[in-house]
Image (cartoon, rainbow over all chains, first blue to last red):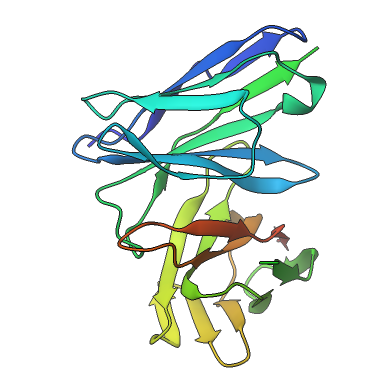
Length: 114
Length: 116
């Protein structure tokens, strides 16, 4: 069974631009979560989607948004990029939304904002 | 404020030795605690998930313990291997209603280096 895939793997943008990241969960998984990882802040929860609806949201500004499609694939969008948005963006999928359900992470998208 | 603190920040051990990583949390109401292993340049991989009622869980050479009273968890690695070199992250989930993952609070991680 294929794992979680994220595209693109690497991205370079300039301040003020916007970016869209994509995540394809493991086949059959319905829950997708997004995380930001930086050396200074570590891993931070962005949001969780289940059945095309955002179920949880972390403490990030409205510039960060996402959506989930009917096939469970998810996209994350960041508008008006800032230098501080440079990070590794990780996507994780799980079968359901159970609190003890194992999450499987993708390899991440490395975003660099110049 | 929900917090997760891990210690030590980094650890160097020799191959074959055992080690223990610590995680203290102040997350409430507690739902579950997870340990992840993250290799450089890769996404985290789940090692264990423990709920309030579980105090020990093993995954091969990895054994996690949870003391919900003192709000402490540890990850014990037995007979370390070079491939154990990675960052180990403790994540605590607070209950947020229903079957939700709830709010996740992440520790900063412990960087483990295993030398031959």
